[in-house]
Length: 325
Image (cartoon, rainbow, N blue to C red; front, side, top):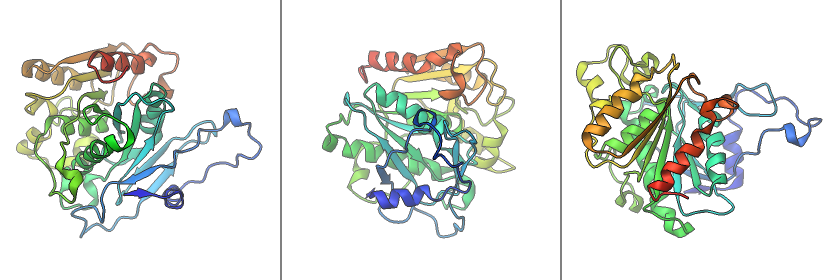
């Protein structure tokens, strides 16, 4: 299920916007090289793609050679990009970036965050997932199929790489936080088993949700995520089914929430309502709210602000759960 270097480079070639020439730029001002280890999620075609006609795209938004800011659209062959630390501590982390279910960012909440956690010894797997509006038979469950499959692959391959299959966490941001929340809360399998990897649990051992899209109901919904996930006329039943705060969290793993109070895209009430649900279900939870930070800050956009400490807060919390440290 791993791709070789040539295939990995082929995936990178899907970018639709070329980067500026870098020949005369000092190395210190050039974005880090992409990891070359790629794992395909599915042994064949992803399930339910008979009516899918989209062509994958990866677009570069950055004009600064010091950093990438890419997003992936129309993904048909979902992948994990792997960052293995120099000194692994045995823990694994599945990272699910956001993008309002319209696309999935590659760097800001994916590779950028993964590099920080890998530096702390956590082996990181960044998910590029399918999107619900691209014609997949599973509709709003297509991203969940990829998330469940990804967690199972990470866990099923852990021991072979000297990692602990009982220490596999998930980190999701924005709409990726919604997807990570569904992965954490929903016990039901969203697809039929395809191989032996599907015999292991898709339940993460802990969950880190950054400014998550949680509710699908008014007045605090992120309208763009709901539109992409449930369409222009969502039913009350659909909104109930896909609202994290309406799910049964009984017996779910420890959960870490982080949000900025001035988030105008995904109101802080998304985390607050979810926290109330977690407390009622007896889920061990920690929440950090920052006065400023806005939305979608990841690592780079929060530099120099109080919320820049969030990776250290998350790692310290994870260590208290016996996950990493």
